Amino acid sequence: MTSPLSMASEPRWDLNTPKFAADPHEAYRAMRERHGPLVPVWLAPGVPATLVIGYRHAVQILADDEHFPADPRVWQRGVPEGCPVKPLLEHRDNALRNAGEEHRRYRTSVVAALDSVDRFAVEKAVDRAAEELINRFCGAGEAELVGGYALPLSFGVMCELLGLPDVAARKAWAEMAAILDGVHGAGERFAAGLYEVVRSKRATLGEDMMSRLITHPAGLTDEEVVAQTALLLGPGTEPMANLITNAVRLVLVDDRFAGGVLGGALELGDAIDTVLFEDTPLPNFCMKYPRHPILIEGVWLPAHQPVVISMAACNNDPAVTAGDRWGNRSHLSWGGGDHQCPAPAQTIARIAIHRALGQLFDALEIQPVPERPPVWRPGPFHRALAALWVRFPPSAPMNLAMPPQIAR
Image (cartoon, rainbow, N blue to C red; front, top):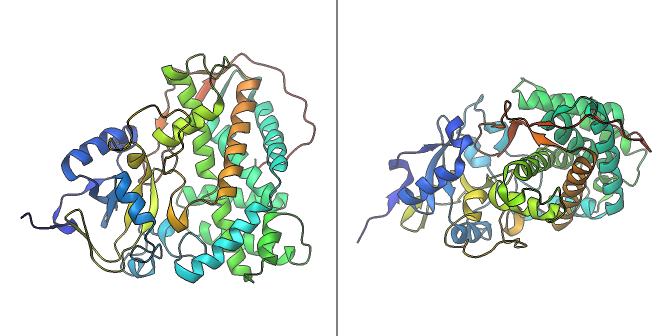
């Protein structure tokens, strides 16, 4: 009988290298051959974790919040300040980083806020943002779509739905950029700016999501409203932007879509679903922290050490990928269990992404720029392009019906 393995005794894969970012699926294949469904990895230097790459095992862990809670407080006690992944993973008073009754309280307020959003308002917000952004570069014949289209569009739309005033939205945009650049104190300034908006909004409630959070029966404090707003605005923005650019890249470089979406043979929804299966924007993100050491498939998972679900690897697990996947949405890109991305959030995201792609392809005849190939950003959690350059025949600006509030 084979003795159980300890994660501590196994060599670990580094998820932060340019090699992994360039071809993660080759890494997942090698991991599967060597380790099976549970893989020892480094999230950062000195930060060990277990990466789950088996679909069945991921579903089991995601559904078991009792043994695998999402609360990182015990884990983070042993993580030194300055650790690059600590700010992203540490405990916050939001639905993502809690378990039990705290999680239910925060989640019900977020779901109610998302459920109050008018779907036509999402379309209109995307249309306004897309038109303004496209008008900035349509005459140039060339554009970079990550920073010039997908990110400001996603952020601007979420700010409008949340009800952030223009000045506050621009400050939040600047601080979010500083957070991504690792600027000290940016996270605190980001939260402080949102706190001021919450305080003023309590006196002038509207029909926006922040107002819904403030008035929800859960009775959220100002700090808790800020935490839910930051969750919607931060982690809710970059994945949407990455899905937009990953879908554009797919359409431009993948033979399955050659002449398809642009020619009308395939739907944009097919491109979105393909990305969610194959290049999902948050490939390794659902974090769990076992309360006690747990034995799974002959491997001991240490207590309070991160167990990270690799949605990208699980979606492409050979045990579940047989057959045609067109129209299939059995992927784990929205997560699973009690922490699955809420249904109204999925609906809003799909509407916004579909609309953003449609506006771009309708307005411009875009083509790749061979001398500026896409480059993937290294990082353990995202599947994100650092830049995506496209070329197109220059065109005149579109007529704007209503200028949106886009961060510049």
